[in-house]
Length: 116
Ligand SMILES: [Cu+2]
Image (cartoon, rainbow, N blue to C red):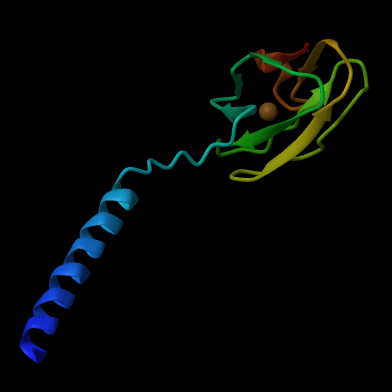
C-alpha cells in the first residue's frame, strides 16, 4: 500500500510540474509599456503618437545623451530626462500637440502627440 501511494504521488507531482512549466513558457515579456515615445538617435519614436484622452504617455530615453519633451505651446515640460530614464505626461485635452527636445530641436528632434 505504501509503495503504491508513493508511485501515485510521484506521477501527480510530475504532472503538476509539467503543467506549471507549460504555463510559464507561454508568457512573452515586453518591457516597453504602451503609449511610450522612445528617444533614440536624437529622434522621437514614433514621431507622431495618437492616444485616447486621459492617456499617460511615457517618454523613455533609450539614448546616450540627455533629452527633454517640451511642448511647443508651453503645455508641459519634462525637463531633463537622462540616459536610461523615463518620465510621464498625462493628456486630458483633445487636440494635436507638437513638442521638441530643447537640446536637439535644431537637429530636427520634434514630435507630435495627437489626443482623440
Ligand atoms: Cu534631445
